[in-house]
Length: 428
Ligand code: SF4
Ligand code: SF4
Image 1 (tube, rainbow, N blue to C red):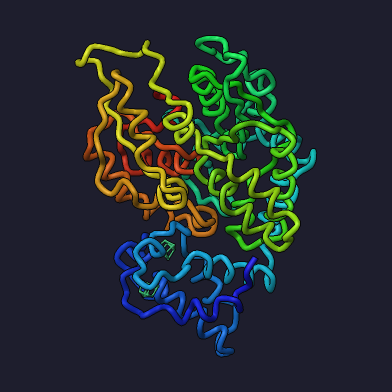
Image 2 (cartoon, rainbow, N blue to C red):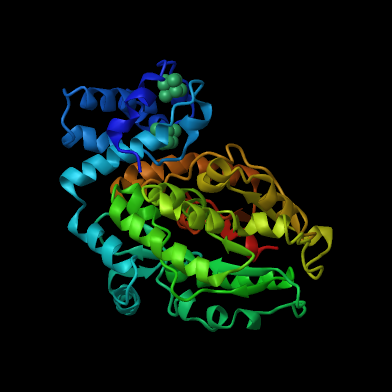
């Protein structure tokens, strides 16, 4: 992993044109130079030149970034903007650490080991004390402000049975397969990720079902762990690295033709972050490449190698069509270049009418830890997205990331938009 000092030359590439302001979701809401990348790079430069400490305002401005990658896309000088912010956050983490609660979650709950399921199972039993039913979608409203969460926030309940404990994950072949897979069918190892495992097991189950219908033989490796993105986003590189190492070993052993996930962020974690985190050990390079080259987002795999065209059973009369629109997760659209595949899968279902929304690629506001560290900023970013969804008149907004689903459900509830949120695999 590169340290902040390694980015001195990269910083010099910035020509201060301000193109990054035009696309930045945090700048659109905050409206100050320090919220956009040009301002943040100036702060990093001031820090590296020795004039600015890593505390207080510097740390806050580094955190006010969803790591959406929009500025990196539009930057005419090709500055590695998100790489610089990630390194700056790692520097802040080295000096200040994380809040105790966040640190405990990242190290013990999301990391390899047995504490995670036990603690979250307990939490799933007592969550009614902190939350009340929102009577909308599947969400709870916090009864009072929770640390790092804000009050009145629509939160997904912890699953009663986590995906990795479910019958579907233990025996993937049992999940509604349309026809038995042929002996030469491609083998697929499914990576669940924390969102699917703890919050949305139904998305994992729908993924296994569709993969089976598409003719794949699916396995769910038992020892997999968090992809490392939450820890990395908050600057805890050592924890993220240990997760990447564990997943490398687990998916090497799985020896499947493909590794797939229905979480855009996890897909980025497995395709790109794993390489970066393990790059300090050249002996691992061949092993990492062998695993990374087989990773596909579930929509990429279905529309690509598996050539999935739907099960042919969901066609309805035109009058009965469900209107659907699609939100592009930053970690799928910008980070993996996957835009057409989810739309093509939705359009292939004759029971759906697809309508494009305004700003489909704008960030939902949750990413980069902003949903935890600055909830008011995060949900204000989502306001424009909610309005865009309302303008389409869609019954359902589809996306391909459990994190975006959590944020969109909260925003649609908060801004009074009557639309359901679903993963693409639940609609095809
Ligand atoms: S778009 Fe790139 S070159 Fe222009 S100000 Fe932003 S970071 Fe600098
Ligand atoms: S990564 Fe996104 S939120 Fe962060 S500065 Fe760039 S455009 Fe703004």
